[in-house]
Length: 223
Length: 53
Image: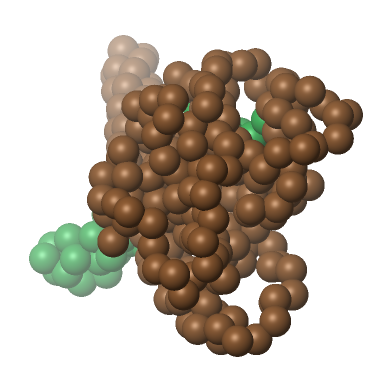
């Protein structure tokens, strides 16, 4: 009787210990997934997207405009000199999880880059390459350079705001004023806030200040 | 349960260790490739879309 009870106790302790060990391993592996694995996958996807985009840009020389990009296709290449000379990200079409895993994504009902209205993007601030990790360092007047197949667009940061996750007005054609007809060309970046949280969104608004053809070469400060 | 697994693995101890490591790598690969990408969107961090709450 006593031995049976002891066997039962040791058995229960063993199973509990093994379950705890397994849970610990899975959690550790999940941390590795978030901090290392997801970033590597995004970097590989960006390499492919960038080479696709560069070969497309060459095709576009002389030819007329290409068809609309499909979901997940590269739309443009973004540069933010404030975040480093090598800060370069291919913007993909769409904001599904599968799109945002590869880079910042364009809200499909927002304007195309350089067009009248609001070109709105979402990007991860942590994990998956964390393209927008440090957009909180942007100051009013900073440049965001967008490279499309045919031209260079220079946007200038005009405002930044922390909003509720439901504040869809920031990605409206006129940011902050849903329903109004746009008269300006703007760009809005959306990411999570706080960096590892989801309770709010950090939103950066900018305005087109310069555009030049691809042939004219990149604006000052872009390699 | 790991004791039972150890008994199930064939061969001498060094081979059992190698087999266990291969199993561990396979389980990790399944988690990284299929399980975590599905689970992650349901966790409350780094949500960046606006409008879906």
